[in-house]
Image 1: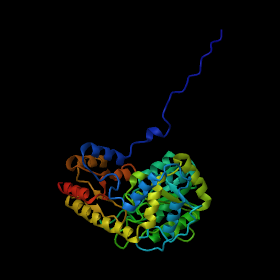
Image 2: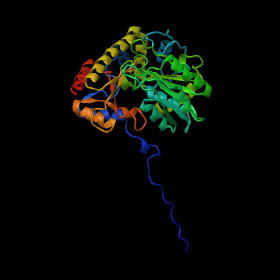
Image 3: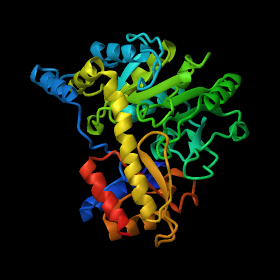
Image 4: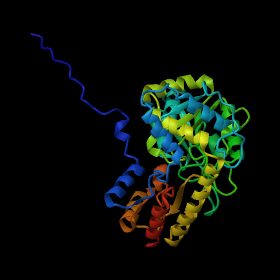
Length: 405
């Protein structure tokens, strides 16, 4: 008699990606800081005050019943306010500006800047495509690409020669990293974690490469108003021939201190925006309704002095933490933009940056992030990143604690 056997059912398993996914070091340090009751300079929560006009309009929107789905691309009022902001003349305190954008066809209100990048990557990239990023990089950019089976290719920037020098783009390294599978470049300007601001000359060099190789430029400009001294933010979309291939990703989390609202925006040529909007709708449906009204009120009513004030306030905060880090023997790279600072941690105990960060937290109660979170494996082990977008009382407390070293 012939015996038959039942096919063996496959085991329940995680996806191929999941076993390689680890909790963000930023999140891990935040949780450890909360457990110890320390001062959190790890996560860029930006816990400064929300502009009253922004908060009041969001509350009013809730009370007036704006609590249901919006159009997938966001409320018309906010899209128009974004378009007006982008059309403003370029100059100090204007952020990304000098652009003519159709609010009905080229702006998508997103569930945070991260939601914008995710939707754009789904719409414009295929599994196996390669995307160039610059080191030190923002880990969420890398992880977003990996989650979509897109290959991040890390291009190191030239390190500063001293604490006041800036990281610089090596265009030869960019060209050396190109392959037939290269599809796009991601830049973050001003940058997390280094505070680098890409210069016009650097962006022009990247634009030349993008035009030669038909590449998209994903430009994360969430820190557009956080620029210091004589620095000026430039969007690649402002360069000749770059408007069509540049995907601008911005938001309100940092500008209005509403990181928990998860409210951002994306600007792209109309030929791309439809597909990007589809994937954002598929994943998030829409950005939070009432919060969109709050952000619109901020763009409509806050004067230019509000934005220049952001830079001047954080310039002073930067000076305080720079002084404290120097006193603690942790030489900092002084950032030209954003609100993070990388500092030397070589004298702290621990073989890795993650252990050094935990040693610092245990000794001082100040949470930082391991520099290795922003570099390829084996690099950044003697660096820690600190966020200085804090209320003055908390930042001063952190500086006092750091000086205890």
